[in-house]
Amino acid sequence: MGAGKDEEDVLIQVEAVTHALQDLGFEPLAVPCALNLQSVADRLKRIQPAFVFNLVETIGGTGRLIHIAPSVLDHLGIIYTGARTDALYLSSNKLLAKNLLHGAHIPTPKWFVPAGLENLEHLEGGRYIIKSVWEHASVGLDEDSVVFAEDPGFLLEEMKRRQERLGGDCFTEAYIEGREFNLSLLGGEKDPKVLPIAEIRFDGFPSDRVKVVGYRAKWEEESFEYLNTSRCFDFSREDAPLICRLEEMAKACWSLFGLRGYARVDFRVDPAGNPWVLEVNANPCLSPDAGFAAASVRAGMDYSQVVGKILQDSGIFLH
Image 1 (cartoon, rainbow, N blue to C red):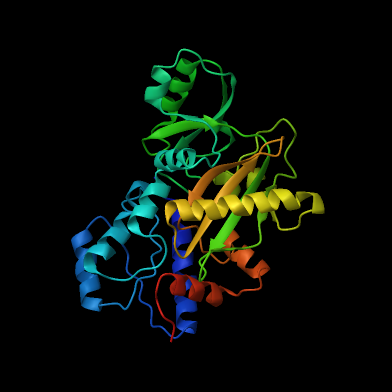
Image 2: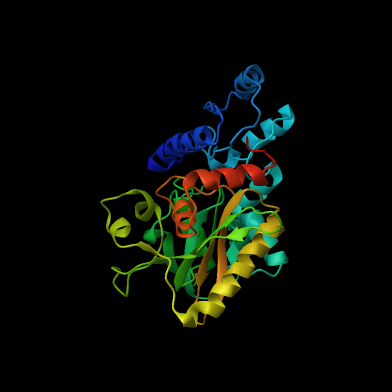
Protein backbone atom coordinates (compact mmCIF):
# COMPACT_ATOMS: atom_id res chain seq x y z
CA MET A 1 0.00 0.00 0.00
CA GLY A 2 1.00 3.53 -0.47
CA ALA A 3 3.53 2.95 -3.27
CA GLY A 4 3.11 5.85 -5.62
CA LYS A 5 3.26 9.60 -5.63
CA ASP A 6 2.34 9.80 -1.96
CA GLU A 7 5.50 7.87 -1.06
CA GLU A 8 7.61 9.78 -3.59
CA ASP A 9 6.42 12.93 -1.86
CA VAL A 10 8.24 11.88 1.31
CA LEU A 11 11.53 12.20 -0.58
CA ILE A 12 10.54 15.74 -1.58
CA GLN A 13 9.92 16.49 2.08
CA VAL A 14 13.32 15.05 3.01
CA GLU A 15 15.03 17.33 0.48
CA ALA A 16 13.12 20.43 1.61
CA VAL A 17 13.68 19.81 5.32
CA THR A 18 17.36 19.04 4.65
CA HIS A 19 17.84 22.45 3.01
CA ALA A 20 15.97 24.18 5.84
CA LEU A 21 18.09 22.46 8.49
CA GLN A 22 21.24 23.52 6.64
CA ASP A 23 19.92 27.09 6.60
CA LEU A 24 19.51 26.79 10.37
CA GLY A 25 23.13 25.70 10.80
CA PHE A 26 22.76 21.92 11.09
CA GLU A 27 24.41 19.14 9.09
CA PRO A 28 21.50 16.79 8.31
CA LEU A 29 21.87 13.21 7.12
CA ALA A 30 18.91 11.24 5.71
CA VAL A 31 18.40 7.82 7.32
CA PRO A 32 15.69 5.56 5.82
CA CYS A 33 13.52 3.56 8.21
CA ALA A 34 12.62 0.05 7.01
CA LEU A 35 11.39 -3.16 8.59
CA ASN A 36 14.92 -4.13 9.58
CA LEU A 37 14.79 -2.04 12.75
CA GLN A 38 18.05 -3.44 14.11
CA SER A 39 19.83 -2.02 11.07
CA VAL A 40 18.16 1.35 11.61
CA ALA A 41 19.05 1.35 15.29
CA ASP A 42 22.67 0.34 14.61
CA ARG A 43 23.08 3.14 12.07
CA LEU A 44 21.65 5.73 14.45
CA LYS A 45 23.96 4.52 17.21
CA ARG A 46 26.95 5.00 14.89
CA ILE A 47 25.81 8.47 13.81
CA GLN A 48 24.79 9.60 17.32
CA PRO A 49 22.58 12.42 16.02
CA ALA A 50 21.75 15.42 18.19
CA PHE A 51 18.13 14.86 17.13
CA VAL A 52 16.02 13.26 14.40
CA PHE A 53 13.56 15.17 12.25
CA ASN A 54 10.97 12.43 11.89
CA LEU A 55 9.39 12.28 8.43
CA VAL A 56 8.48 8.58 8.45
CA GLU A 57 4.93 8.04 7.16
CA THR A 58 5.05 4.34 6.28
CA ILE A 59 7.26 1.36 7.07
CA GLY A 60 7.18 -1.69 4.84
CA GLY A 61 4.67 0.13 2.65
CA THR A 62 1.99 0.46 5.32
CA GLY A 63 0.85 3.34 7.45
CA ARG A 64 -0.07 1.07 10.36
CA LEU A 65 3.62 1.01 11.40
CA ILE A 66 4.01 4.79 11.44
CA HIS A 67 4.47 4.87 15.21
CA ILE A 68 7.41 2.45 15.09
CA ALA A 69 9.95 5.11 14.08
CA PRO A 70 9.39 7.34 17.13
CA SER A 71 9.15 4.22 19.30
CA VAL A 72 12.65 3.18 18.18
CA LEU A 73 13.89 6.71 18.87
CA ASP A 74 12.32 6.56 22.34
CA HIS A 75 14.14 3.27 22.93
CA LEU A 76 17.45 4.79 21.83
CA GLY A 77 16.90 7.96 23.85
CA ILE A 78 17.18 10.21 20.79
CA ILE A 79 15.23 13.47 20.68
CA TYR A 80 12.92 13.77 17.69
CA THR A 81 10.50 16.23 16.16
CA GLY A 82 6.74 16.09 15.95
CA ALA A 83 4.22 13.90 17.71
CA ARG A 84 5.42 11.40 20.28
CA THR A 85 4.84 7.67 19.81
CA ASP A 86 1.53 7.44 21.66
CA ALA A 87 0.06 10.54 20.01
CA LEU A 88 1.09 9.31 16.58
CA TYR A 89 -0.46 5.88 17.21
CA LEU A 90 -3.72 7.24 18.60
CA SER A 91 -4.21 9.77 15.81
CA SER A 92 -3.12 7.47 12.97
CA ASN A 93 -5.52 4.69 13.94
CA LYS A 94 -8.67 6.41 12.73
CA LEU A 95 -10.96 4.25 14.84
CA LEU A 96 -9.09 5.04 18.06
CA ALA A 97 -9.04 8.68 17.02
CA LYS A 98 -12.79 8.76 16.44
CA ASN A 99 -13.43 7.08 19.79
CA LEU A 100 -11.29 9.70 21.52
CA LEU A 101 -13.02 12.55 19.68
CA HIS A 102 -16.45 11.13 20.50
CA GLY A 103 -15.50 10.71 24.17
CA ALA A 104 -14.32 14.32 24.31
CA HIS A 105 -17.59 15.55 22.72
CA ILE A 106 -15.76 16.81 19.64
CA PRO A 107 -18.14 16.14 16.72
CA THR A 108 -16.99 13.50 14.24
CA PRO A 109 -19.24 11.71 11.72
CA LYS A 110 -20.87 8.54 13.06
CA TRP A 111 -19.07 5.39 11.99
CA PHE A 112 -19.36 1.63 11.77
CA VAL A 113 -16.86 -1.20 11.83
CA PRO A 114 -17.64 -4.56 10.13
CA ALA A 115 -18.52 -6.29 13.42
CA GLY A 116 -20.95 -3.49 14.25
CA LEU A 117 -22.72 -3.82 10.92
CA GLU A 118 -23.05 -7.59 11.35
CA ASN A 119 -25.14 -7.02 14.46
CA LEU A 120 -27.09 -4.04 13.13
CA GLU A 121 -30.74 -4.62 12.20
CA HIS A 122 -31.46 -1.19 10.75
CA LEU A 123 -29.23 1.31 8.99
CA GLU A 124 -30.33 4.88 8.47
CA GLY A 125 -30.42 5.37 4.71
CA GLY A 126 -27.84 7.79 3.35
CA ARG A 127 -24.39 8.20 1.88
CA TYR A 128 -21.46 6.51 3.59
CA ILE A 129 -17.77 6.74 2.83
CA ILE A 130 -15.53 3.69 3.18
CA LYS A 131 -12.04 4.42 4.51
CA SER A 132 -8.87 2.65 5.55
CA VAL A 133 -8.26 2.49 9.29
CA TRP A 134 -4.55 3.17 8.89
CA GLU A 135 -3.66 4.61 5.50
CA HIS A 136 -3.44 8.36 5.05
CA ALA A 137 -2.70 10.72 2.13
CA SER A 138 -6.07 9.59 0.67
CA VAL A 139 -4.62 6.20 -0.26
CA GLY A 140 -7.44 4.02 -1.64
CA LEU A 141 -9.91 6.91 -1.43
CA ASP A 142 -11.87 8.52 -4.27
CA GLU A 143 -15.45 9.43 -5.11
CA ASP A 144 -16.37 5.78 -5.65
CA SER A 145 -15.58 5.29 -1.96
CA VAL A 146 -18.92 6.98 -1.27
CA VAL A 147 -21.94 4.69 -1.53
CA PHE A 148 -25.63 5.05 -0.80
CA ALA A 149 -26.76 2.42 1.67
CA GLU A 150 -29.87 1.65 3.70
CA ASP A 151 -29.06 -1.96 4.43
CA PRO A 152 -26.27 -3.02 6.84
CA GLY A 153 -25.54 -6.13 4.80
CA PHE A 154 -25.00 -4.14 1.61
CA LEU A 155 -22.60 -1.76 3.35
CA LEU A 156 -20.74 -4.67 4.91
CA GLU A 157 -20.29 -6.33 1.53
CA GLU A 158 -19.02 -3.06 0.02
CA MET A 159 -16.46 -2.81 2.80
CA LYS A 160 -15.28 -6.38 2.28
CA ARG A 161 -14.98 -5.75 -1.47
CA ARG A 162 -12.70 -2.76 -0.90
CA GLN A 163 -10.75 -4.15 2.02
CA GLU A 164 -7.62 -5.18 0.10
CA ARG A 165 -7.44 -1.87 -1.77
CA LEU A 166 -7.57 -0.07 1.58
CA GLY A 167 -4.69 -2.02 3.09
CA GLY A 168 -6.74 -4.42 5.18
CA ASP A 169 -8.74 -2.90 8.00
CA CYS A 170 -11.43 -0.46 6.95
CA PHE A 171 -14.49 1.26 8.38
CA THR A 172 -17.30 3.42 7.13
CA GLU A 173 -18.56 6.77 8.29
CA ALA A 174 -21.48 9.00 7.38
CA TYR A 175 -20.59 11.14 4.39
CA ILE A 176 -20.93 14.82 5.26
CA GLU A 177 -22.01 16.89 2.29
CA GLY A 178 -20.68 20.43 2.61
CA ARG A 179 -17.61 22.63 2.77
CA GLU A 180 -14.17 21.19 3.56
CA PHE A 181 -11.51 22.95 5.64
CA ASN A 182 -7.90 22.21 6.62
CA LEU A 183 -6.49 23.80 9.76
CA SER A 184 -2.70 23.71 10.13
CA LEU A 185 -1.30 24.08 13.64
CA LEU A 186 2.26 25.01 14.60
CA GLY A 187 3.57 24.52 18.12
CA GLY A 188 4.04 27.64 20.21
CA GLU A 189 5.24 28.64 23.67
CA LYS A 190 1.84 28.08 25.28
CA ASP A 191 -0.80 27.16 22.74
CA PRO A 192 -0.42 26.03 19.15
CA LYS A 193 -0.62 28.74 16.53
CA VAL A 194 -3.46 28.21 14.07
CA LEU A 195 -2.14 29.14 10.63
CA PRO A 196 -4.48 30.76 8.11
CA ILE A 197 -7.41 28.43 7.48
CA ALA A 198 -7.71 26.84 4.06
CA GLU A 199 -10.95 25.83 2.40
CA ILE A 200 -10.78 23.22 -0.33
CA ARG A 201 -13.17 24.30 -3.05
CA PHE A 202 -14.74 22.04 -5.64
CA ASP A 203 -15.49 24.80 -8.11
CA GLY A 204 -15.52 22.72 -11.28
CA PHE A 205 -17.58 19.85 -9.89
CA PRO A 206 -21.09 19.24 -11.27
CA SER A 207 -23.74 19.58 -8.58
CA ASP A 208 -24.53 15.85 -8.64
CA ARG A 209 -20.89 14.74 -8.34
CA VAL A 210 -19.58 13.52 -4.99
CA LYS A 211 -16.99 15.94 -3.62
CA VAL A 212 -14.05 14.11 -2.08
CA VAL A 213 -10.41 15.11 -1.75
CA GLY A 214 -9.31 11.65 -2.80
CA TYR A 215 -6.10 10.20 -4.16
CA ARG A 216 -6.58 11.63 -7.65
CA ALA A 217 -7.32 15.10 -6.26
CA LYS A 218 -4.11 15.04 -4.24
CA TRP A 219 -1.65 13.29 -6.48
CA GLU A 220 -2.73 12.83 -10.11
CA GLU A 221 -2.02 16.19 -11.71
CA GLU A 222 -3.84 15.45 -14.97
CA SER A 223 -7.04 14.23 -13.33
CA PHE A 224 -10.34 16.12 -13.24
CA GLU A 225 -10.27 16.04 -9.45
CA TYR A 226 -6.79 17.58 -9.23
CA LEU A 227 -7.58 20.33 -11.72
CA ASN A 228 -10.91 21.25 -10.15
CA THR A 229 -10.04 21.44 -6.47
CA SER A 230 -8.40 24.59 -5.19
CA ARG A 231 -7.17 25.91 -1.86
CA CYS A 232 -8.67 29.23 -0.73
CA PHE A 233 -7.65 31.39 2.25
CA ASP A 234 -10.16 34.20 1.73
CA PHE A 235 -13.45 34.26 3.64
CA SER A 236 -16.38 36.58 3.96
CA ARG A 237 -17.29 38.43 7.15
CA GLU A 238 -20.22 36.03 7.56
CA ASP A 239 -17.76 33.15 7.95
CA ALA A 240 -16.09 34.71 11.03
CA PRO A 241 -18.12 32.75 13.66
CA LEU A 242 -17.46 29.51 11.80
CA ILE A 243 -13.73 30.25 11.55
CA CYS A 244 -13.59 30.87 15.32
CA ARG A 245 -15.41 27.60 15.96
CA LEU A 246 -13.03 25.66 13.71
CA GLU A 247 -10.01 27.18 15.47
CA GLU A 248 -11.37 26.23 18.88
CA MET A 249 -12.04 22.67 17.77
CA ALA A 250 -8.59 22.31 16.17
CA LYS A 251 -6.91 23.46 19.39
CA ALA A 252 -9.09 21.04 21.35
CA CYS A 253 -7.84 18.22 19.10
CA TRP A 254 -4.21 19.31 19.68
CA SER A 255 -4.78 19.12 23.43
CA LEU A 256 -6.78 15.88 23.32
CA PHE A 257 -4.09 13.96 21.42
CA GLY A 258 -1.12 15.64 23.13
CA LEU A 259 0.31 16.82 19.82
CA ARG A 260 3.66 18.52 19.38
CA GLY A 261 5.49 20.44 16.67
CA TYR A 262 2.90 20.57 13.93
CA ALA A 263 -0.41 19.03 12.92
CA ARG A 264 -3.40 19.44 10.63
CA VAL A 265 -7.07 18.91 11.40
CA ASP A 266 -9.50 18.30 8.53
CA PHE A 267 -13.15 19.32 8.78
CA ARG A 268 -16.38 19.08 6.87
CA VAL A 269 -19.10 21.63 7.61
CA ASP A 270 -22.62 20.43 6.87
CA PRO A 271 -25.29 22.61 5.21
CA ALA A 272 -26.60 23.60 8.68
CA GLY A 273 -23.18 25.05 9.53
CA ASN A 274 -22.11 22.28 11.92
CA PRO A 275 -18.39 21.37 11.76
CA TRP A 276 -17.29 17.73 11.93
CA VAL A 277 -13.72 16.54 12.45
CA LEU A 278 -12.75 14.10 9.72
CA GLU A 279 -9.13 13.45 10.68
CA VAL A 280 -6.39 14.61 13.00
CA ASN A 281 -3.05 14.33 11.18
CA ALA A 282 -0.13 14.40 13.60
CA ASN A 283 2.53 14.54 10.88
CA PRO A 284 0.99 16.30 7.88
CA CYS A 285 2.87 16.64 4.61
CA LEU A 286 5.65 19.24 4.72
CA SER A 287 6.32 19.44 0.99
CA PRO A 288 6.81 23.03 -0.18
CA ASP A 289 3.71 22.80 -2.41
CA ALA A 290 1.46 21.18 0.21
CA GLY A 291 -1.18 22.76 2.40
CA PHE A 292 0.92 23.23 5.52
CA ALA A 293 3.61 25.20 3.69
CA ALA A 294 0.96 27.22 1.84
CA ALA A 295 -0.69 28.20 5.15
CA SER A 296 2.73 29.12 6.56
CA VAL A 297 3.46 31.42 3.61
CA ARG A 298 0.04 32.99 4.10
CA ALA A 299 1.07 33.62 7.73
CA GLY A 300 4.24 35.38 6.53
CA MET A 301 6.66 32.60 7.42
CA ASP A 302 9.23 31.03 5.14
CA TYR A 303 9.98 27.31 5.12
CA SER A 304 13.09 27.52 7.31
CA GLN A 305 11.18 29.48 9.94
CA VAL A 306 8.53 26.75 10.05
CA VAL A 307 11.16 24.04 10.46
CA GLY A 308 12.78 26.13 13.21
CA LYS A 309 9.45 26.42 15.06
CA ILE A 310 8.93 22.65 14.82
CA LEU A 311 12.40 22.08 16.29
CA GLN A 312 11.80 24.49 19.16
CA ASP A 313 8.42 22.96 20.04
CA SER A 314 10.10 19.55 20.13
CA GLY A 315 12.68 20.77 22.66
CA ILE A 316 15.52 21.20 20.19
CA PHE A 317 17.52 24.40 20.52
CA LEU A 318 18.68 26.34 17.51
CA HIS A 319 22.26 27.50 17.14
